[in-house]
Length: 330
Image (cartoon, rainbow, N blue to C red; front, side, top):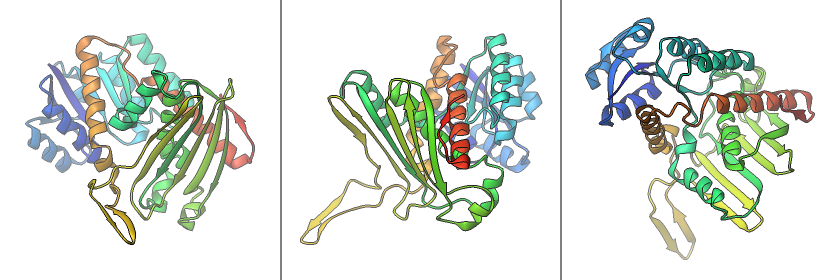
């Protein structure tokens, strides 16, 4: 039985707490959050106890720590959990600073800790199947990976000031997916960006519309496009083109019902919220972590290095957007 301490009782903490409670091989022991009511409500829902972060780190009856706190606390809490001998599942990113990620991974390596980073999209059933078929050779040699990710609506301009920017906050998921699908490292990045949705986001120093091209040392290409606005829902699509064909993963609609008549074909809208669209991915992700801890697998994927590589791509894209020039990664 893997006993968990969950840090963060917000929306992602609630999602993970539910998965822990439903897994017969796991138990939810403690919840920590600066919002005492949120912590108490979530703990009460699942029969857990409220504790401070320090108490969770010291607790003898905690085997694993799930970190769903704000980004600025991730590295510090990973290091503390590692030093306390806990297995760690942490939401992305490890840190907005590559230097801090390096320092954190040194602690994890020194303590031989189990660390998994929450790039949940790898565990989406369709995207996981897409990657599996690539590895089986369905499209031959991969030549171009295309990732499209568009949010239904932009966040408040105030949010972007502390987010690290679109490339580090939103597109980082797509950088990880591009690496996951390509299975090669990208060596050069070129980015374009603009504030076309909300000018206040531009005034805050960020973009809400962006496109990135990346290339590996062997010449293979990935193209990522992001927008903070999609009037038709949460747009999540991928395409992989290779020497023998093409694989694609489409959007998930509210239902599969379609109307066909003289005016054409009409389908229900696509799902509109990330927690709805990736509900199964979040569950699969955490259940995979639980299975890894139980089996003694100390290197579940995506791991800390995957977190580092995605952050390096995000940094390169941010630099390229600002300079208007291609940037070599690292």
